[in-house]
Image (cartoon, rainbow, N blue to C red; front, side, top):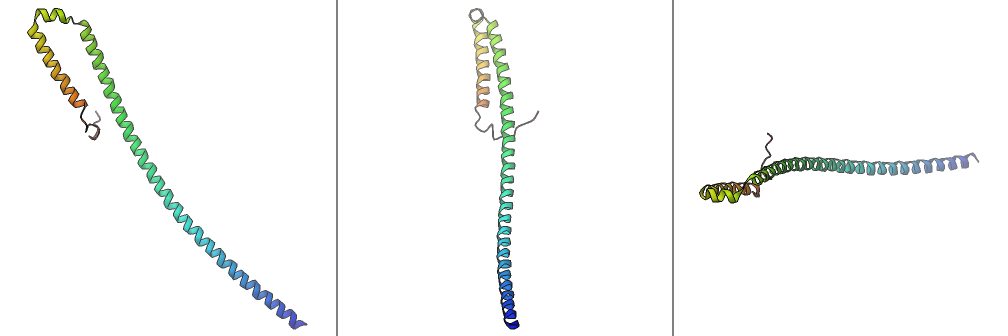
Length: 134
């Protein structure tokens, strides 16, 4: 009877050792999978952080361009208002009758200035140039 108990206990011991070895191997596989997933996640987090930094940099550039455009718009509106006041105070009919050559010279000079300004404003490469901070 003692021999049977020894054999049964020995078999249970071998079964326990075999199942423990299988379970340890299974856990090692799970650990390897988790480590691989961690590496993938860390890589993706780093890529997303880089994408966020690039996006923030682009947003700063766009904000700077918007500020520049807003300042240019403000200056243009000041010029428009100044010109409106100037034209409101002028009587072109009286000036043309009094001195037509002078009026023609003024119109030609102003037209040249307007043309130069339009050329500057319509420059297609104006946003590619580095903004200048005054």
